[in-house]
Image (cartoon, rainbow, N blue to C red; front, side, top):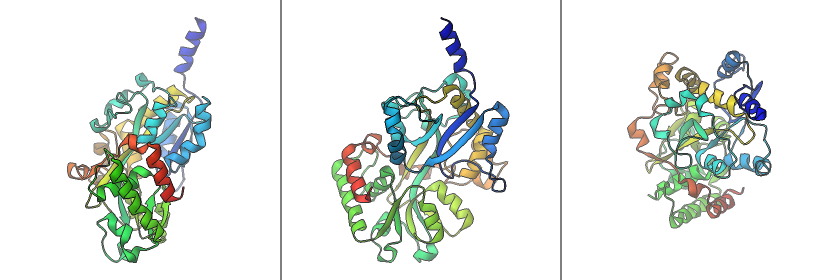
Length: 352
């Protein structure tokens, strides 16, 4: 019995260190000191040092690196990892995620209603959203010499040949191609998927597409190596700060919306990770992250809190999208995103 008591006590003791894996450009940073104010404040409040590692560039790549250890039940040296819906669903399904200590996360009540019960984690027992985002088209109107309104232009416009990139994330790229054909990416059908794959293959074979990228399309667009690309809304808000001429559009045929979720990989420190999740779900803290990250904030109350930081952000439709914008986007079918046959076809086209 004594062990159980000791275990229970240990479970609610903060660790000395919290290790987080995340995507790049995904938390506030002080450009002068290169420190991260949100993490510094968490350490000041709790005494927990944060090791923050930007090593998620693509969900499959991340899973490939960690799969063997996870399968053997070994800890991977991370207390929180941020993964997109379909990969988060896989982690939960395979038993590779720890259950959150929900009693430690009273601020989870601030989660926006639209994200409260995804099919793969209906009670949010294993996950909480970090950010959501839109997938559309990013481009440089000066280089393109006009406007882009359709994914078809990326695939076929001769003046863009060799200056186009698409995302390595299948739900993003194939989601946009399905929408181009008027198909529903939230309920993928094989015939429509195959048609999209053939169209993508043709653009690869012709040299229209320069490359497939994770987050790393951002510097390519900024430098002018790429003129037009499938892109994520938050990256584009940030890129526009340096070059206001850059544009982000949801294609006429429609775009995609996705969520990246915080999970605790098996062996991670549940109590410390849950304490951090509660901290970032405080609307003031969420607003501070949001003011730098510029993706779609999952925390109710952050819009009001961000007004005191930068009122223009509260009115930015890419950060706090209105109903009209949300009506133009769909979530990709999580089962299809993890379908071996679909994935193999896509990987074969992108040369992965």
